[in-house]
Length: 281
Ligand SMILES: Cc1cc2nc3c(=O)[nH]c(=O)nc-3n(C[C@H](O)[C@H](O)[C@H](O)COP(=O)(O)OP(=O)(O)OC[C@H]3O[C@@H](n4cnc5c(N)ncnc54)[C@H](O)[C@@H]3O)c2cc1C
Ligand code: FES
Picture 1 (tube, protein in one colour):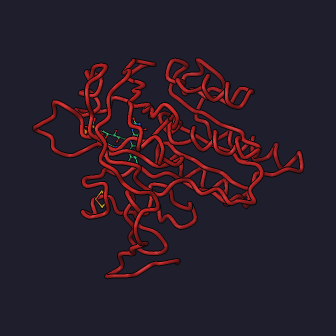
Picture 2 (cartoon, protein in one colour):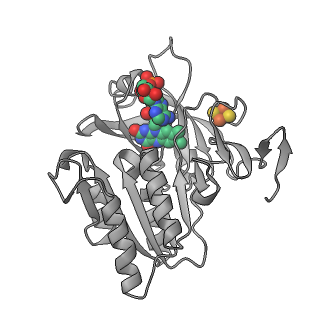
């Protein structure tokens, strides 16, 4: 493994690729999009300039003095020119509930860009991106990048209900074609989990004689494990973006370790994106 140094089963891979900054961002908007789902836009010019698809910000949520830990969020959208980053978040607990009360022009301190971005091989010409729930957030910048590079991109989105498919229109506008969608309750698209749509996409691409040569997946861990297995069966290189609870977010505390074929790795700086084949699930 390049640049790796091993100490007691824990593998260090050197410093993150992009320069970390601690930026005081100004909230531009914080609006509900769907059930428990919100879109926050923040002016953070340094992070907006430096962020790569798949990296995240570690946010200190205001008015949470009794909870000192920051919370990690993928960057869903960004405009480097306007210095804006967008976060698509779901309320699951105290911090994300507090986030819904952040008003426009409030200041939020964020460390970023953090982590290892998606790394589609330069030779990959056809990519399948698979998202469950808010897993659609870290995949959108990747879709933008691949399309800008004139590579073919197909997308599978799964959510619980039609109202929770909040990124569908944004993906559809980018792809200029509807993504394959599933909902658990059948209120939009295929009824059930999105895995049959993934299998269908892989089989169709093979049938067309243009199989996928890259697959990226983010969502609940059981979904990522299943999709990683499908990719392996079809011989497609697969990357996964793992979610671990993170304390420091800068590689110091080891609260976020992941067991891999190369030893224990820190999800915050060695991930969150990992090659699926190296993850010991
Ligand atoms: C690299 C990374 C990127 C992320 N990107 C996004 C994103 O774009 N949008 C988004 O909505 N969420 C994202 N998350 C998850 C988000 O960080 C957590 O939902 C958030 O920290 C929860 O904070 P809380 O205070 O509301 O929850 P807490 O009150 O701390 O916990 C409430 C519940 O949520 C669970 N939980 C908390 N943190 C996590 C976590 N990291 N993974 C799984 N379960 C957790 C707890 O186990 C608990 O059951 C990301 C996580 C990581 C590691
Ligand atoms: S969160 Fe501290 S090492 Fe990853």
